[in-house]
Image 1: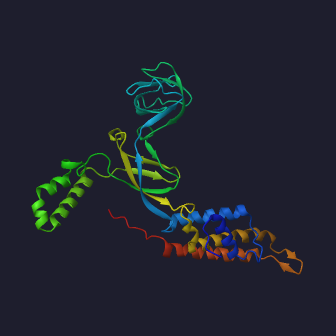
Image 2: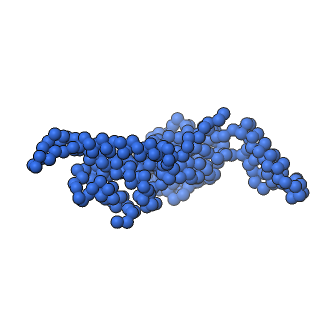
Image 3: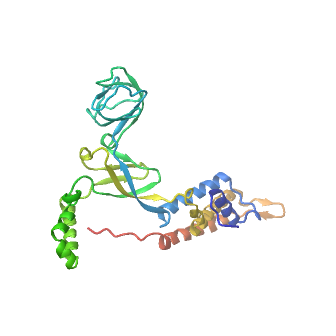
Length: 317
């Protein structure tokens, strides 16, 4: 049969590899699903084709309150919570979403389902949901499929930032255009490297913290200097989702590893009947199946580290 392109076909492919339908594979479909998910998790963590590097962009929109009716609220008004007493200055309104950058008192947040009023609107309206942006929450919520964040690109202005004539590279080329055209670019390259070194030394990189199980990216910098409407670019790794890219199900290592995991489950199930004699003096030997599967899993995981994983990078500094 053709290579699998869906999870259902992949499960059947693994079961046929173990002997189905010639012999009965004593595993439940839920157990097969669990072992396939376990194999995928290992594949995403270690295989160089299991994750891809991306540049995730996040627009800083600020926090916002979704209210029942935003009619009468105006930009630059102060919105006030009737129960909590929280206050914030409105920076924009989109539909029934009332946006603000920060709370006037960071220790007094808005509460869900409370009524709010503003300077221009004295008739209260209720809050149905609250979204906290970077400036209020202190972190950026990342998608579930992001398994690692390794770098945040420069935020705000620095030595080499700027646009047009205020950019250092523009000024350098403008004042040295004749030399650049007529001679090699070694001097220009060395100058840019020196500027980059000065930037790293005097300004530094934006410190960041991320944990895949929390899905929160913390930027350890002064958030007030980040303007609403700007974008934060994050270098990250996301899983290669087999529901989107069906070629994942054709990966030879994944097929063998998932089959070994199902075989291990099969052996575990049969160990309960060790020593039981069936008609014809036939006995179950679940222990042998279990040991064979254990050896296959160990061999495949060793192959993963030696042949299918990216080499560990040394840290210098």
